[in-house]
Image (tube, one colour):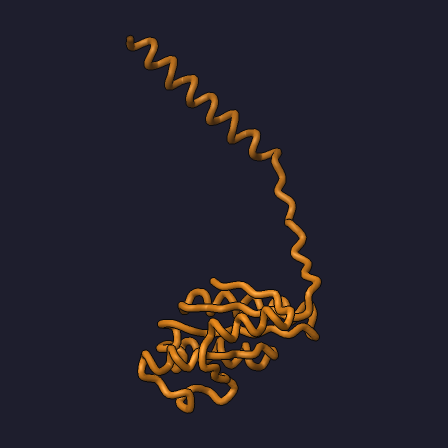
Length: 144
């Protein structure tokens, strides 16, 4: 029984080393991430998603400055829009030409007034309906 256990451990260890060795010769090539559309929108509901959408939009605008990119903000994240740590990212998004739209219904639910937000953040009465309108206008949309 001891020999069988030892042999199993030895075989497992050898297999793991062989797999690790094979990984060294395995190369990962970056996947091309070219986009061809000209209108994009992302619907976000939390701070993490807002930050990642700003990052994505900024990257895409750098590659192709003429694209239109909108970030539609709804849900609990509206409570964070006046926080200092997020303001720098929002200002940078605005400067990059990214349109920021916030759901007025969400603002109402969380007791926030649109006029208390930076002036470059526009309001829409209903974020879901707004996203449908963007889709009808041939926007490539994503909800995260």
